Image (tube, rainbow, N blue to C red; front, side):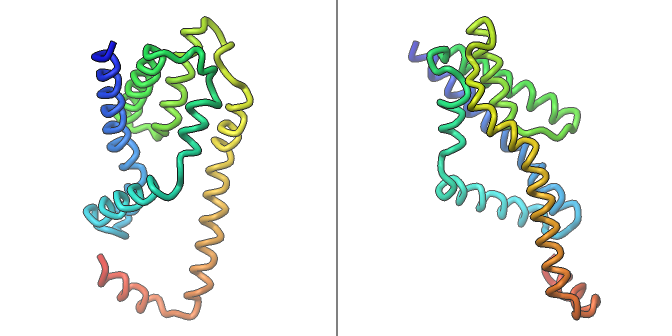
Length: 175
């Protein structure tokens, strides 16, 4: 049993590695593609903020996934393994075909699917735990769009009297 648990932990690390190359491209592609930052600078920047986030944001998401979405009495090492393997396969499929997707949502879906399979039906699902997650799947892009609009409007307003050639000359020094 100990060997089996260690194998699951190794597969979790494999998921984490795949999550890294799957999601990191999404997080820095626009910055590199538009030449705002060089690839090296973008990777260092993303790594730094991911490291800082691990110690400052907290574990609320992990707690919600761990106890608020699936009946924990259903969870066994097989359910965890099934969820990880489902998420890994989905990440690799979407990566191969260039489809934008979230590794976190893949993990949640794999975990839920494995729990439903183990329970023999939807009784494993805690509906209240899925409400907040489902709402924010739809709200997050809207919040991002509104925040981006407000930020961009503020930047345009702050630099409204600056000649474009001065801005271009300043940005050329950093690329």
